[in-house]
Length: 171
Image (cartoon, rainbow, N blue to C red):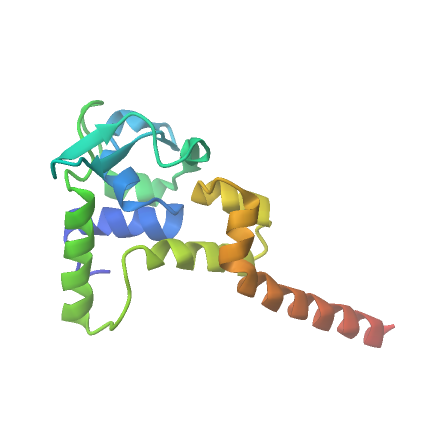
């Protein structure tokens, strides 16, 4: 992370700690930040002619959401004019920059999108309920989140059974 450019650090932070997609990150403007709230409501996508287009709505209706930024995250993002893009990168350049960084660091096979997966898995393992995680990810349904991250909840069920057994043993 420390080897990343300033813009890529912001992208990594927003994907790994706030679960944003590349297009959502690219579409963010400073005006989307109000206090500690980050309002996610748009996307940048590739048009049929190959150009990048700012859509005023994200991937799904559920992708419209609010993330809560820490003071450290706000400090890294900085300030700018309301209509100014925060990272000024296209979704593909975010992925390309991340690809070059991971190869420079010898990280092996990891995609930028995997940062979102890590966010979800860590959130679930640390006790966030599946509905909250699904909303944080902007998934269309909780069922989709369960389909993708069911393996994490299976481990949580085993851990729960182990805790219950430890409790019973302590009686």
